Amino acid sequence: MKFSPSSVSRSDLVPALRNDGHAVLGPLEVFRLLRTPLDQLMALNSSWDDLPPDAYLRDGGRYRRRRHACFVVNGGDVRLAPHRAHWQPVEYNALHGGLQRWFEPIKPDVVAHAAWSPVLRNLADICSQVKGAQPWFVEAHQFRIDTTDGIGRPTPEGAHRDGVDFVVVALINREAVKGGETRVFDAEGPNGIRFTMTESWTLLMLDDARVIHETTPIQPLNKAHVGHRDTLVLTFRARAFQGPHSENARP
Image 1 (cartoon, rainbow, N blue to C red):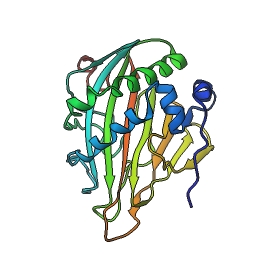
Image 2: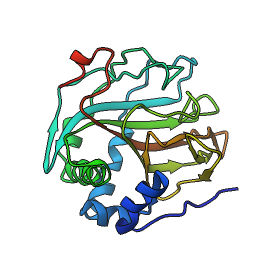
Image 3: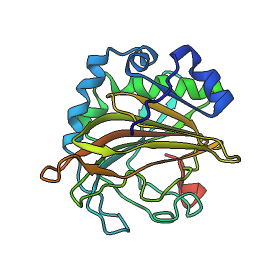
Image 4: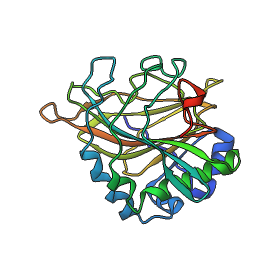
């Protein structure tokens, strides 16, 4: 059974983040929020067809492909930071924490695309409206989870936080799969919600200090065909990028 997300309007996004710690926007509200035509956003989707395998999966799986890049967003300025390893502490990622993972960078033509900077700029503005204007250190991940192994795990680490200020998960595409239910729980209480994102450029935004999240495994609709689920995951962190040493955390 699929549960559709309860979405908010762009004008209600900041109040929802302040009140609930999470919010979902449908595709039409996303393009209004990002001030970007939906066809320009959709033009980015094909770049998910060219993601290299994730060589760091500690569960032995072959189901994840990804690219990674870092940016600093300060007001209207979006700057690509030097390529760096993705790092998380063990307390936030028990499976892959403490490991410097060097992923292939997001391709230059994607970063230069007319829709890319508005995505980062306008979402950073939402972060500033909630937690105060400041530079935001943004890590961007293009993910493809497929059913090569018969099952694909969007969050192999389980329900988790990321150790940042905000997390954004945008569904890019899902093809020939079942499952992939998103679950969001209060970090300090029993409340939670569950839903399945099915429309391209549906967007979930989370206050990482207040909620934990996970996405259930996907399986193929037809065992004769490999299906996949594509997402863009953005993390916004104040002060610095996450790193094993604070002196190495700044671009």
